[in-house]
Length: 327
Image: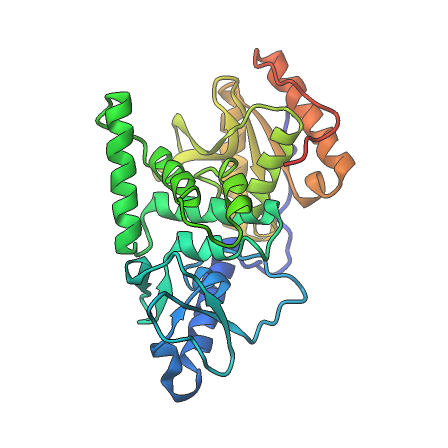
């Protein structure tokens, strides 16, 4: 597949996905700290507010009240009552489920906060948010609660004993920890949805759209691709390895999702062009897509068919289904 060189769009630079998450985190911090009578310092923030503080996308619905912050009440603790607060009673959490955010605010850890959204989000949305949680945990760039630290260590030790391997990929540990967390014996609101979502969660997704693409392809019968795959022996001049948003390494087939900033950021555009040309020169088939590629049922089916055809040509049978299987 030949990629035609595109001229960078002269429009102003668009804020990237991770920059947007950082901006929303800062806004959430300011909102929490501005509560009357310093109430923010006494509360445990939860659900969407907790996730936003920790730079996780929460896919807010248009009818959600943005000026209300989510806080939680844990067993044995006073009710979270304050003007501007939406209270969540959460009986499966304890003080060991709480972290101190870098701003000094207290929040529930990522897994409890994610599970609290199960009754407020669609299954696809819960998977998208779960992907972001898993990727953040695998990158180890967020504070962990005492409970979550113990869960991750216990899962890793059990996986090591089951496989007789000393080095268990952190991604495997994180995904298995999430599955065990949602399947805990205690009852909680949204448990069934969390268990269903956990079956589809993967580490490595760097954006909501990448998760949507992966889900669309697997719903049409294609094998699950790797997320954010680092390509062996191919690097930028800086030494940073090339990565692909989604890929089947055995077939040398990759997918790159271009958001707006890929077109408006000159350096990003040059890096993308260099990377994709070199990958093609080394035998890779690269699909470059945007939001329109997965915007409709027909568009998703057409794209999945094109990918399935190339995979089959390269020896990977896909089991393509023209009608997407529901999640």
